Image (tube, rainbow, N blue to C red; front, side, top):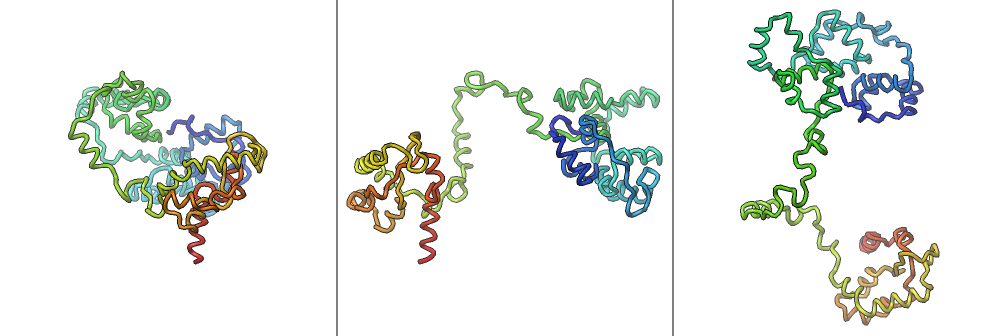
Length: 337
């Protein structure tokens, strides 16, 4: 069974789905990707009462343990290897109905595929006999607490109980528990490197070996394989920085700010001010074929104060020419030509 605390099911959402939209427990299990125990736990927590069971449209009678076809179950569970949750969804019933049916008809839970008890466990079971062999059974609530709340590993639990790890795995399968993945099992304090930062780290101050450096360089993605790669036409021209940082550009910005009285022309704010070209800088550069700083200094349109405006950062971000907006505008103009 899953850790119930990680399923943050909203009370109103559950009421809407179960009582108003009339979604069954089985379908809710699919939506939330959890077991029926989690749904029943939330229902009990919110003080919701289960709806009276509907009649099965295929059989015309209330779906109880008696109404499940034995041959159908054998085929699905033992031959087609469907799990109990999938059969619940297929029959639109809860897990409790399937469990009652299996108990009544003497069906046993399938053994875990590819897992066998260790030789040590087999020998120990022979020694203690059939009557005492039941002591190896693990309590469901205890296992839930140890694995999901205390975050202990299955091997650690097996060591405490003096049994094999496959035995613990078999009990988890019977109870419908879902194993943690690797990232979940090494979160926070469970990670052996937790808190070992800076000088505390065993690798602090130790340079990489020449082989490790070569390995690292060989595995760095280059060219188009690198996530930061940009096509030549999309790259920022280095001349842009030269033009924007030249003295004439700084003087132009001061004149625009002074004209607008250091206030945003849209919202009248005086914080985080930007000086923006009304006709985009990149478009002027393209139309006048500017390819050097000298060519930019001679272009009168680029330094026209009437083409400048004062905007705060928030208002600037709302304009059509912010960030990639100018690039998209130029692209559209090229397509029209």
